[in-house]
Length: 190
Image (cartoon, rainbow, N blue to C red; front, side):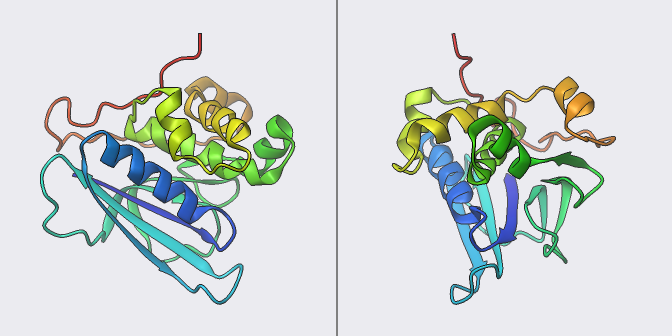
């Protein structure tokens, strides 16, 4: 069973990222549970998504420790994961300047959340066609969002080590999964 926590402040795309990933996994035949914990009355308040997925029915969707924690804000206290991927300056596992890359590569900070989705898809090994991916992305700026997701998905370890302030990372694997259970990876652009 795969368990992912996505945390950030309201407006950072936690719901868009988690819903997009959950929809992709469901379309691939996974059982999916997506739970949100957020204060909808305050922009900038903490928002957390708990995503559980498996080929078998999910008996307990509660996530106490995730396989991956995607941390977009420093407000994510009390969340635990085997691997943490976060905005630069927020952790020591894998740091990626999502907001900065959104500006540098796509002209707007908001595309940082789609870069984060792409990186998360790579870590969970999600393999879908560009068309399948585009179909779950928001209509507004769909082409830019698709490009940003693909950019994030194709970040290489050497890119992370060289130019993206990545520190020493722990190895991550879904070894408790059945062989072939989590094999999803975006098709390479030709």
